[in-house]
Amino acid sequence: MASSSALSRLSNLHNHLRPLDSNNQIEGLVKFSPEVYQALSSGRAVVALESTIISHGMPYPQNLETAKQVEEIVRKNGAVPATIAILDGVPCVGLSAEQLERLATLGTRAQKTARRDIAYVVAGRRNGATTVSATMFFASTVGIPVFVTGGIGGVHRHGEETMDVSSDLTELGKTPVAVVSAGVKSILDIPKTLEYLETQGVCVVGYKTDEFPAFFTDTSGCKAPCRLDTPEECARLIDATTKLKLGNGVLIAVPIPKEQSASGSKIESAIQKALKEAREKNIIGSAETPFLLARVNELTGGASLASNIALVKNNALVGSKIAVALARLREHSSKGELLPIQ
Image (cartoon, rainbow, N blue to C red; front, side, top):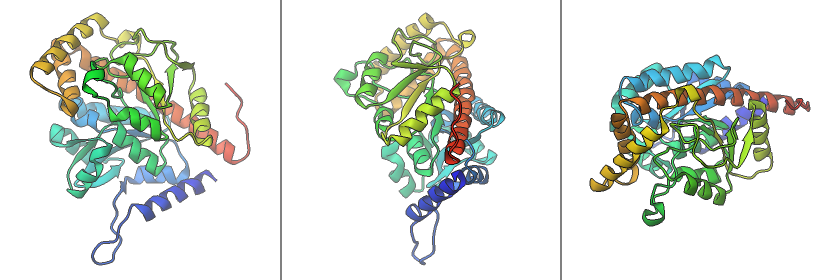
């Protein structure tokens, strides 16, 4: 049953996202890696991974090393990694080693691609590194229910004046994918971000924590709306969201391990300085977050980058376990079996 469902999804994708070319031949628009295609076809656990973190989130070669290590963590924990990007105008779900290398060396020359940019990048046969919103879109389209990232975007500080709100939040409100992240980036306004997610109807979960994490650090001063403590509990939540046809995503916020958390006060001080510099240089919109993250890393002597890498790996570990638990739950459900609550 699970395999049949996956094949049906892939067949629908094939039919709807493959236009006819001038010679009346079918030309593929979305390309799967063989590993991801086989996993989806057989109902195995697959974890979607974004590509902006590779091109814009870290310098070379740390970005390539981290991307490979994250994929290996996913595999070691029983799931298949599906890094998503647009290369030469072709949306790719699952990247080869050569494609990862290409994206890492392209760096910021690859366009930072949110949902609004997808058609532009595809139509122009450009290279695009997918953000949270674009990765969610592709993951949902091909039937990948779990997506791991570092931190999502949110309401920027002074967002009530600038109206600078990440499309990640609205995507979570309308796209049924579970996003595993270390909360939201601490360069943002966390209380306003949580309020916005509530307005969007997004279930926000603290994983093994009562406090919503702040990306670089494990505390933010904001209470998590709800708490779950095991991959199985998260899997049941995701499954219930799907069966109820709520149509929105779930945010599972995983705090960075305490031993790998950088000094909160040191990072906050660096953030305030970086924000001031961004305003002075009139750096706004999609350029602001990469600038702030890079500047904060400089001001903290690399501590924030080390924390960033640590939290992404930890999220991959947790997200893989959730994806495996969800695949197992759905396999038993298709057979009419009930798994015991753990």
